[in-house]
Length: 341
Ligand SMILES: [Zn+2]
Image 1: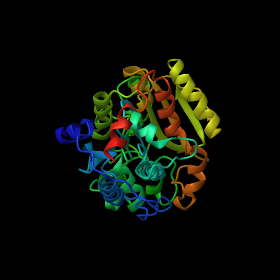
Image 2: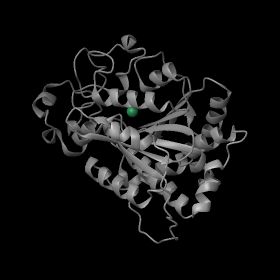
Image 3: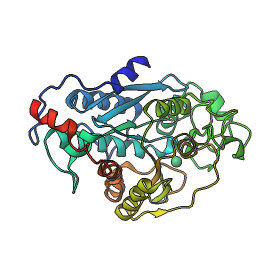
């Protein structure tokens, strides 16, 4: 843990020339196939190695079944944006979204290319994305490989199944303790009325932050103190936005225009990660529901680009708007970097 904090928070002291000519490398991330936990870990290591100039990382904690929860920092700027995916197990297509984002923007930075209208050098010299691409790796493993692949298989089989359909593990949403990570945070938790026992979805846990995955994400957020937070979910091409100030409202307006997703009213606090961020930081928050509504099952990876297309600029918009509020900071870091190159 300490090693990760040091590495991810460290100022980049070693600047190595890493100009990558166009098409010099083949892509590491293949976003339209299933992302298992192991493949994600492998690809993150490859990405960090290839793009060490602009990407570093480690892990933020360990899941119920002992999987390290990876996180990477993309960017070297002072504006901190926390981004996470796969809090809900069956929504693991959101991991694909963040892995594709990481490679696309790291590659654009290294090869001095723009993405859309965005100057990626400017974005990543002035902002940093702290990305947790799979918050709930045990749950994802259950969805992808079945309950027999879990160390808690016997316990899981006795739990209540919501959204029951065959095979039941495909609709799993919780972690390996049968707790919904997104109802386990420490603000509004007591107001969440759910089943009193672990289940495939919807159980808030026996106490707030009881789960190692939610605790790891909460602790990580408190360490980095983000200026904005984005969490990826899947159902319905909608947005749940927290806009506590004018800056947050400007980000929200741009995200709505770009995605054309409908903003939804925010529920009373119920222990979600959004409630946690609202309470502790009071910054822009977007819960992005990336996919058309498909019911309680994973979205088909082969249709990845259908969900990438409308939501592809959410993260650069957040960074660009935060940077746009700077009076003096623009390209401060970038100048040094370009000299070194
Ligand atoms: Zn979700």
